[in-house]
Image (cartoon, rainbow, N blue to C red; front, side):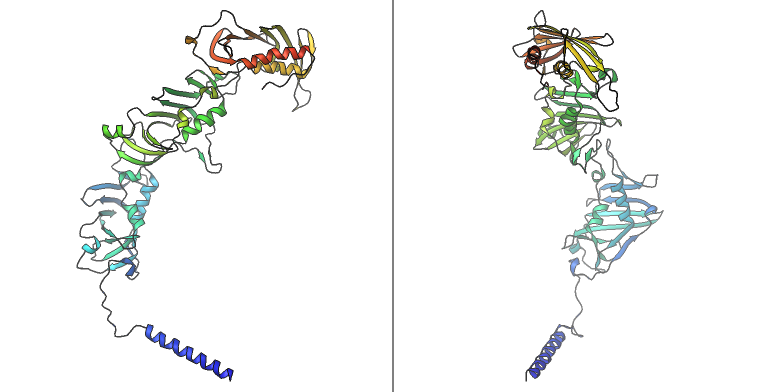
Length: 488
């Protein structure tokens, strides 16, 4: 009995499915006269090439706006590629963008045929086209593409090519053909040093000059590549000219100055040919300024106007255009110059030193040194020494000399604004093994700062009291037979 019921159920289900299929099938006598719809999504898909030519045969593309004004022209550049006209003085143009326009013009296809020979073109916006694009291949193969309204899907435009039909052409293809002159411009005014693998800026020693100026705060920082004469035996690659002169520490210059400056990135065009009122409105009455140069001869001069967060209006020297930029940091205009300076005053290597004479308020001492070269490769040599004729350990000899090296720049001062004592409070005379001497003299500026002179020349830098106090303490420790600590 159950088996019969199951069979009956299957038969009923099949009959119901057949009945539904009959109702779903179109009536053979139904009215098929359907009027064209402006909605390209309801039109039958019928891809068709509106232009199908050789890319290399392109003679020109001319783009006109709704008023009939020529926006730009794409032409062969004589070198197998294409260029845009008219060019704006001072700008470079993206060859890939120009090439994309040429390629799209050579192989322009439709997404669908929307209507054949419609009587009313206004419903497609083709009675007053948004753009008219004239394309020529060879000497006489001419095409005129008129671009009307966007389709209902907004992924395409209604277009005509003179054969009476209306086509839907992809929005991307139209965007490639209707670029304005400014759309072809490149924004790379200085090489991009961003390392996408490390997600950091890596200039790798390429930068030779950085200058940042803020007229509102009288801030100026100028750092350039140091000459061989300036470097001497030091490893510093940079020399500061403003606000004070002196060698710099490479890592500090890279991290605090260069990487901040090279991060400035222009990302758009805001106004060409700005008026005086617009320049004032967007912060160019007294702009902050940044200069950059590299070993390849590239250089850029930014004027930085009104800033919101890390975004700013900028101008580039030589261009009468207000641009938009990102990664503009206020930190660039507040770098502490002392943080960049190469801080060592005495830079001799212990292996090259025969004697150091100490003249301090607490007394006078003489450190005599000798250096024995290592007998094995990749080993360090041995330092021997004595203080006032009394032998001290190799470690203490090295560390006492290191306390001299630790007398570093603390901050700069203006020599014209201070009056120095007649005599130095501290004097250190370093005699090298070749007989050459280096004299460091320190004059008290106040209770915590001492003006530094090297070989009788005022450096313009001050030393902090703490490092000098530690030298005096070192001799007390030696007198007590103790072990000197490492200088901080």
